[in-house]
Image 1 (spheres, rainbow, N blue to C red):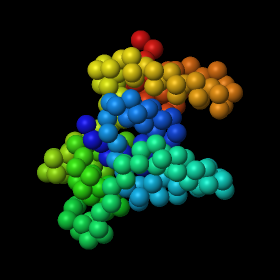
Image 2 (image 1 turned 60 degrees about the vertical axis):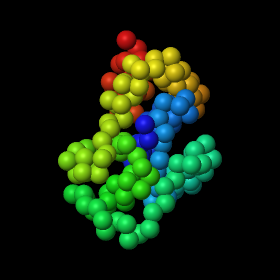
Image 3 (image 1 turned 30 degrees about the vertical axis):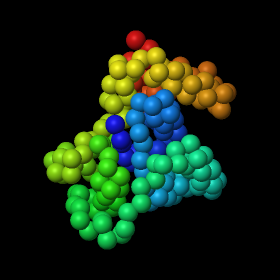
Image 4 (image 1 turned 180 degrees about the vertical axis):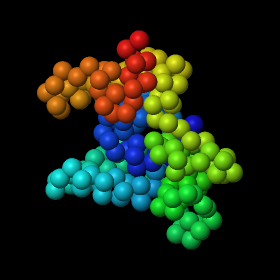
Length: 180
């Protein structure tokens, strides 16, 4: 399945690393646009003066890991689509131009299923989708979860537990599935 990843899934780190880890395992094919990556960098400014700098480094790393993920489209293409929040039309445009099957987002109200359906797209909640992937490929997804947990422990110096880490990352059902 080819999935357009919204900014709110790429930033924060844990959610991004779980989703991209599953992509690296071959469980989904990810797409995004340059504008989505730029939104990520701007959103990271909120954590302090170095937030954007760190985000740009992460963006460079993600871009190297997924060199075919960026979807380019002409600006005039934006006028062909409608969403309740006009600032999200670029996400829908990238998904259509990128021949995606779905948009992964936590902003459910901004992407009505009827509008997406008119464009042959589905809307995926990261938490629900990751649980589904876990049921389909438990060993591969568990390995991704374990790697993300190990990295969170290494970087923070804290003894994170899977369920608590995933809950903090807005993936409570996924954390529960991994610990059941």
